[in-house]
Length: 433
Ligand code: GLU
Ligand code: MG
Image (cartoon, rainbow, N blue to C red; front, side):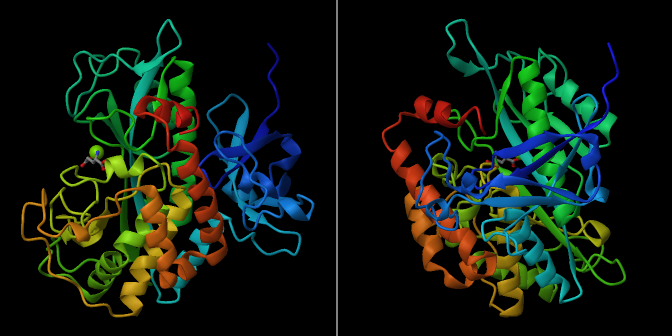
């Protein structure tokens, strides 16, 4: 077999959280661009082209957008002789297109940098494994000896998670842990925290790599928020900290994380998340299944509450302090675009910090229930989208054009999925998420 020259797989993560891209020759392994049709942002999971989707110019000649990347952001890929990169999407006038999720994250980072603070992010992904049975039906992967924190072949007989681990090591992708979750066959993957844009690039590349390696083993790895009714959901927990000009962790207030001893930065971030709780859901939990996951007593970020080392609150103040001080936001799921979700987390936190919002008291109950059901996220995607649309400070901060396209596409998704039973709903999405 001849040794092929390197190629570049240039990709972006779209409004549906699908990675789209092209294979390109080695001559593109530098600062460069490649063009895609802008109406990609009007295509739905069922491949329906919605020509009126805002910002996509379907009715203005379906023009190009340019995906631009930096040579120094090109990474080792997981396929033979293939490098990978993600980038930002530009219109013909040289400005980012309004729907570009990575540009929305860059704006959010820049807004924090004006305060001398660099956001650091660490994302945890959960996913269920499925296989196709002899009739072609999608069924859960059989892991008869699976337990919470399971490792080894009782938790993963086909050992596809080992293949994911080994490939991540080989290509230098920073993975902190893989373990089996409480329900089977569910797994958790935690990526090493880092500067926001670089980290989310890692997340979207990892998620794609993991799904492709799993599929090589005959496993469909799904990040859908609630693929198996009655079992736990799949979250995408977003951990946040900031480094200041001296590279100190700006959330730190002593050697231990203490919810009774938060500094003004931490209080501002949490207050922003509390005030924009319902609206954030429309962006960071944007799937027709998301509201089956966001329920009371599901450890998932349903209630508008916060606390210390407590998995049953939406915002958990880590018990680790000093360099490791961080806030964990537990509402998002990985059917959101991770750039958009992280931008939303950062912008809501900034609204609270800059606006000096008052912080509500921390959760005093066990978090399994509350006397006030109005304090939860919406009951459905359609209501969550209304909550999002009603919150002008948040939608303006994240990006009015991005949110307008999102509302249109997601309202179409509500209609398209309305009559599907749980298995049909899972199968509508499963090849993409
Ligand atoms: N699976 C839970 C969720 O949907 C989170 C469980 C945990 O890792 O604490 O977010
Ligand atoms: Mg977990």
